[in-house]
Image 1: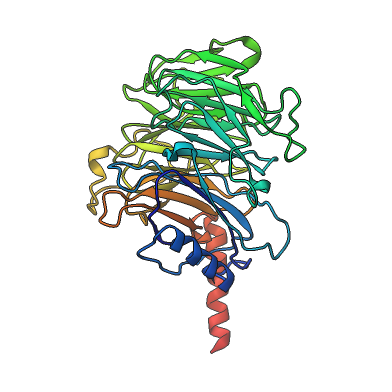
Image 2: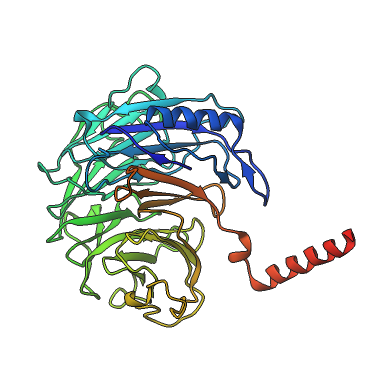
Length: 424
């Protein structure tokens, strides 16, 4: 864990290793320490601390950086993906300069075609890299055109489909664009075949203000949803044309900043708002949210369901907190008003909160659950307000006693007590 200082317009991708262990803490392997030190040297790191991580195997992490001198730095992390199944992958570090060294707002990979990296910057075009060709070519292999000039400045609305190689991106003009990277002579199954300047398959119009986030239906490559500063949640289907199939009118008088679609139950969604609230919705009954959960004291920037779960999700925001929720707990509405989150002991903690992670120094810009290792989370924060500037990446997992059923927790504590007595 360290504070990252970088030149403008850089993307770093690197392998690192943490020993795989079961229900115990493990210090970074010597290989990963050397590798991370190399990364930090290239980033001109002033402070570096060896951290402790839980159960992370071989992963590729790609980080997008922007100018450390900017007053506000959007820093985003992509999904954690395993590119090399070998137990001892080669140590690799690649520094990719983005076109015109522009700020990197968001980066993503595909769930299956993990060798494709898509970056969204302040430019009107999105850029695509082939990660398997980085050893000899750092230039983008393709671009995604269609956004108007300046429409992508400080915009983070980007997602990829789980099937068919499709990409959606929102912009400040209220438009959502869809591209198909498998169209024509391109084949995502053959690394190296992806190239060219892609035009959008379709343009979707329905928002009157900035589109803040977009998300594919996890079970469909044609259905997706979007949220924006106009307070609207819109559902789209590419087969029905460029107008929304369902328009959810604002249920709160603030901007909607983020949305996530549950993969285990595709009727379930969660959104985050500018006033620090998160809402649980059922798309079959979109007139009124199922739950309103209040735990953040400032805007929520990112929400994400835990893979395979319809109970747990995480939210992160401008207050530098990342909260893990269990929506089966509690049951009341409007759990905590924003003025209660003042740090005082009298403030009542909502029963749905499993963990309130306050380990970041600046606003938490993004989070991602590891799709392979249960309860492992990566999160990135913007630390520009601090003297060192830059941003921080954390990879962590909550203590399992926090989320396991009470009876299991008590039974394990009883076994531990018996073991201690036996050791005497």
